[in-house]
Length: 377
Image (cartoon, rainbow, N blue to C red; front, top):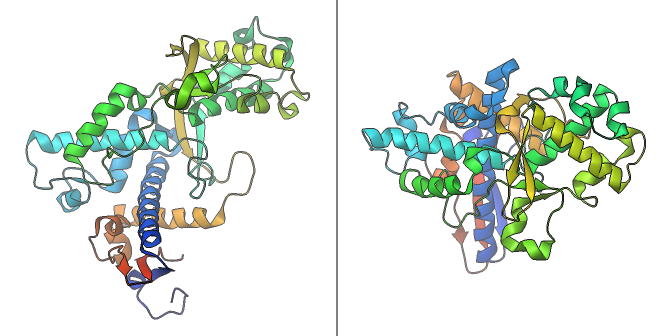
């Protein structure tokens, strides 16, 4: 049915799944919904990054540029029903809804920076489609004066070695959501979630059942997990000698020898101090009465990539699927979309457009879940 020689129209092709109980059918339907929503959001993010070109996508443009890539703007009346709770809204409330969506998208783009949070649906960085760049990093790595008072390992290191070490540190902060982004501040997330439920339709709103992600902080002398508790642990990016950060920063591939725990501590403290002097990271207070560190959000730029930074092979299935959704967005933005692309993957989630609704057909013993299958290139 999905082969090149198939006579079935592309927009009529389906993926049919069978299960022997209703509960599993309902569960799989939810997975399809989630997969399509996340794929559409990521493809729009990649489209926004691609459009920015050599300048890269800056933090202050996360929401606005991705929103434009989706076509979810107030002036586009035909698309209002896809994201607005009340598409007939007029006046100031219409602008409020547009601004709320922009902030929600910015929040979700930041949250998607997290490392491995969807093991069955790798993010753009893990697929080798996006890379992160930190403004001022090259200058900092080459500035030996910035590392005065640091350990000998940093003074003896080349600029490339220091850059590699700084990348490990900054990537850890970003992937742990230890950033100064306004859209991750607890008070902002709470008010944003409330506003989104009043103005936006699902899945673009932040539902009351959704686990809200907030800004964390890198802590070298972090409290024990029992002391941090279930609510406190997500707010900590651990930087002690036994942490993931330590395993990467102590590795011989950076220093040509393995650092001992004491040297590691001196190195990471010197790296943070040097990065703070360039305003790439900032020291923050934490609820655990110890100093924490966050990446300065305005130092981040996202660029399109051609492979993973670590050289590992990216998942070809998810990478191909993401490129196909991206092609449909690019085509729609240039008014060259195929019929299936113009209705967008979001139609499956919304139960609108020319694509069949994602639904559950129940019998006494068999559940049947039909869904759209993204066409092969």
